[in-house]
Length: 438
Image (cartoon, rainbow, N blue to C red; front, side, top):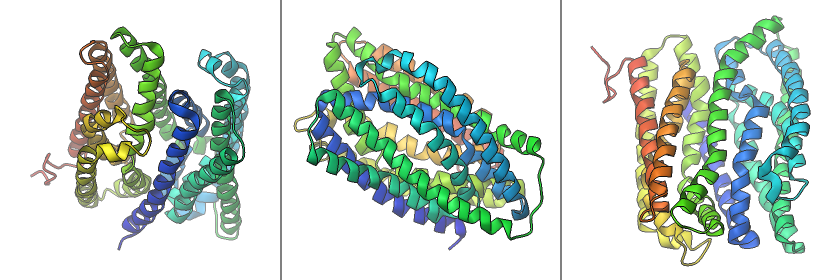
């Protein structure tokens, strides 16, 4: 078995365990926060993701790509420059966040200490991103796998004990749930950074060369800036989505409170179930970026074509059976959260959305690995504008409401996947049937 499939298998097993725990976390949240509270919790998560993207500056991607492409004697010097860069960025982001976050209207419905949780996340994410990037690029996937599992396990344990020992008003309960999320990131930071420091000491005893700091920063930013732009765009649209959906439903005649509740069931129930198998896609993404980067740097196009075929077959092999289970067993799955929930229909209608995203995630890794981050961003821009337009227009129709919103989401997922696929086929010189061109 190649190192690629060993790493992918290890990450998949750990991610499966993590997703099972995440499923339990969402069940606990649904029962402790209630329908309205879950809607508020799910609505603030995109904003958290936005802060995480800014704090990480996509250093895991750029560092892993650098490590995969360069010899080991350059690694320690590059990592030291990356740590200094992360420290400077952390100071800037914290200073800006202290001033900006308390002024954002989205926090008006939450506990006044919630913005400070976001600020605490910034240094944790920034420094753990450097460690994560090194372990990804060095193909030490066991570290990444355990860190991903540890985050969810820590959150579940904290939620279970805190909510079993005490009861809270709704705003405090949401704040406590967010505290457990930040605390789990603190646990992951402690584990990753300790392992990273041990690895840095090991590299210190091996032959090494010094790199120019300016050159290292430029190399990292060449990947980090467009990739961060892509992630910021995804995070921003993800943060905007709850408000766009709510506005569309209100225009269709739904009461505002009911609209927020329906979004909570869409995101907290249907998405939790539908994206459950995506741990396989994300595991492939983590392993694919350094693998594709290395193969493309060496111009091993036959290896890239073979890798693309295997990834597509693997994705179809788990994706198609998974969405069939979602469609035919939607009612018992959604009843784990709420009885007699409209999320049953939501889950069934979202089948194309989930399936095409399973394909799009590893395709994005291919685009990053072969240096087509700009194309990935353009694809995301076109598909999101189209999807949001359809979601708003169709969701505003009284006869469609949430069905129209979901139809627009499906359209965007199909368009994004097709654009990714055609671009990759052109770049690695294969037909749409993944056969080498003459």
